[in-house]
Image (cartoon, rainbow, N blue to C red; front, side, top):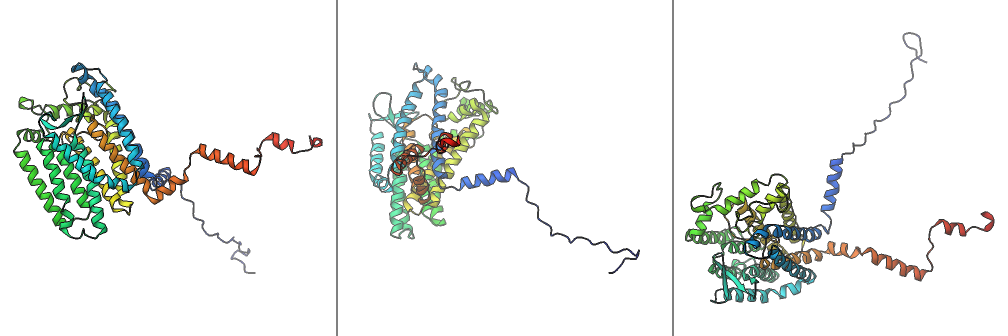
Length: 452
């Protein structure tokens, strides 16, 4: 046995154990992110986002319409809840349309395309007939349907263009005709320009901009070449510039971009007081119903500028909540359009998403002073039954398309109500015999009397 220099035997050292990697520390942020990511990728995420987001926007819109319209109603010698009751009735009817559209198959949606287009064109022609059409704020785009109720056919024209354009492009894609530019443009672009002409006869350029956005959204989804897309866009921009330059009212609205003072003749009064309402709201607002600008200072407080009243009463937290709901709705619509294999569903979902997103951006941008005031309502939020009814039908379309996804359909089929499962369990136990309840009494009765 070898010895050391001191004469002592060497110390026997234990062999080193291989280093065991330490488990990673539990990161709560990473765990929360992973859980959110898994929830985000579930098949029913888009379905719940569309359903929940649209209902939350509608309910919050009803609350804000009631708050923002009370003073206007009293100034018109009407009950304070007058506009709220009309909006609530429209929301109930819109909810029925949403439910019906969400239960319809795609074939029935496609069957409604041509009747809806023809009906919208007929009503928009009636708007220009003297004695039938009604002018509101200088725009003749309304039809009186009796009593205090009026109908704006151009709002239904948006839905008609989405359904008809989606059906047209889907049929042409099935026949492999979209590779030719003439089949991509004709008759989609001429019909869209016909609708735009009928709308512009009444002077409603805001609705015409939304219709143009829907047209470009459909062309983009159809895969229009860049040159073709750019050519149609150049034509639309040229017509828009001509229409703006030839209208003193539109030029005045364009001049109010970024204005901080009402200007000469109070030409920028509405835009400036919308900024005042947002600025006075602060972080959490002055409180529901405590707006100052709605007392005659801000015109159209319950329609086009309801977002400003929301910022004043609910503050930055309220406005960011509304923006988050619209962002979630837009993401869900894009997800439905991107995951489907049905061309009609893709074009229709993309058209509806383009419509709602573009209208929300134009309305909120005008309130923030970033875009000219176009006079379009905030979808599902502003007062106006003519705008609410077709929008809720369009939301029903998105819900139906989200349900038709194969993964979502399987997930929905697996989710039965608890009450139904209990009844099924009871029926199954009746067949198998009496159910043995796992209780102390049952276990005690199984023993003999001597074991007690």
